Amino acid sequence: MRSKLILLSVLLASCSGLSEPLLSPYKMDIRQGNYVTPEMREKVKIGMSKQQVRYVLGTPAINDAFHGNRWDYVYRFERGGKVIEKQNLTLYFEGDNLVRMDNGQAGQ
Image (cartoon, rainbow, N blue to C red; front, side, top):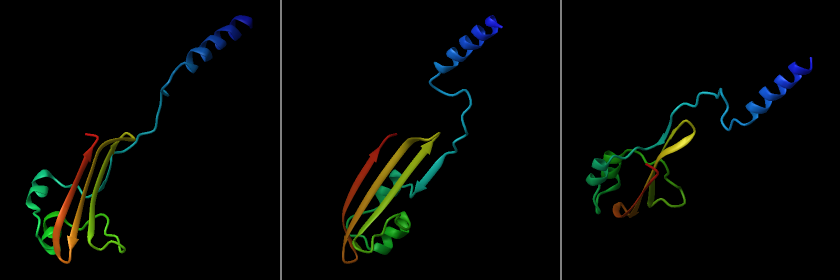
């Protein structure tokens, strides 16, 4: 009986040292937002109308009612619960014309 208790204690102690569980749930790939390719970005030019920009890039992910002259194209890709890629493209309009673009990209 004593040897079984010692063996069980050793087995339990060895399992507690594992940093990752032996079995973990499957985490599917998650893609959210608008994926904007470099080719699409190159097609967008200062002075284009909102309609032209929407034709090239699609509908923005964020079109804030309080900032109607700002469009945000946001993309995020996660694999296994970890962020693989993030992209941000913010467009600023005056009236109907594009006046400024801010590119942001991280985590590839």
